[in-house]
Image (cartoon, rainbow, N blue to C red; front, side, top):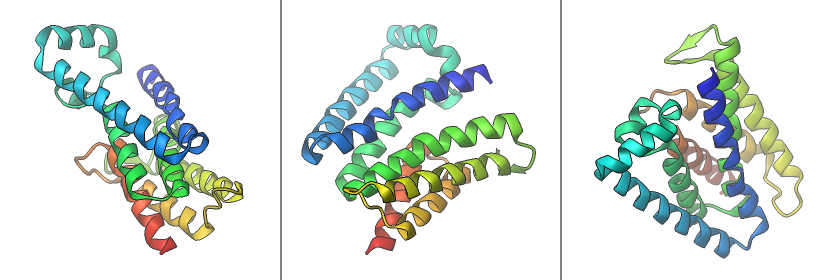
Length: 192
């Protein structure tokens, strides 16, 4: 549980992405995400191909790494790449909502699922999924109150439900990539 708390604390730090996307002009926010993505991919390439760097990474962050991150991309890299693709695919309200659904909804699912989870669904829990849905719905409704975002309620609900389903399903693609993109596409479809 301690490892999961540390992972989610780092996950919460990524709130800088939707906050920055809200504050900065969209073009500047996209450029910042592109720079972050390039830096992350270069670091990953070096880490995965240089044994000495891989060893240093394991020593510094070994307890925080999931098994697939030891030989593949870090989840944080997937988060940056997913955010970048969202920024180039969706409107500002959808980008901010989709990334917040990932950050806050996924954190709620993991923490509630570990503490209160009893009903197993795939490798997750019903309780964690309900927490994800509740947080995503709350975030979506709050974003609907922000005047310059004005996320429609039907889009917020569609995005929240989609984010929850894609957090729950055992799809072999990192959830930091699949959650914001799937939620973003669902919101865009509803808003069309």
